[in-house]
Length: 137
Image (cartoon, rainbow, N blue to C red; front, side):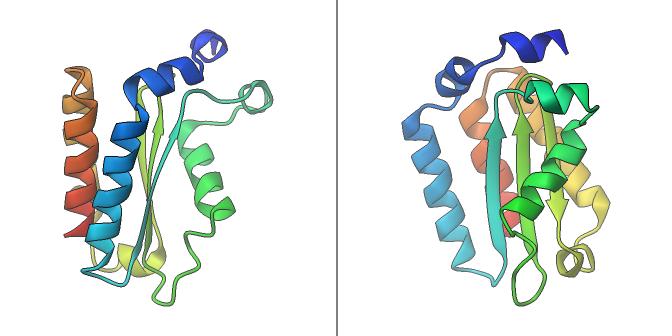
């Protein structure tokens, strides 16, 4: 919980500058031309103090973002959220029930592992773009 108090949007903007966010946005848009799904990529520097005090986990926060952003609200129930919580160095993938019927959990686990590998080496761009391309395929 201590790391959440000192992680800030400065870290977020240092690791994910505007130019990288634009690349991520473009990669998502290009990929979505190939399918009917909706892919979102959400990054948070830290959890709020209220979330910390209530015991919110990275997974529960990702599910909350999935709901708040209405990613589940697609015609074929095939929304995907890739959620990063920088303070915890956590990656969560939340998929809608329609997508879960077509893609096994092991594939999402592999995608998350690849992101962890890239991020551990400071390869934020590579890890982000690779996972978006994999999710779009």
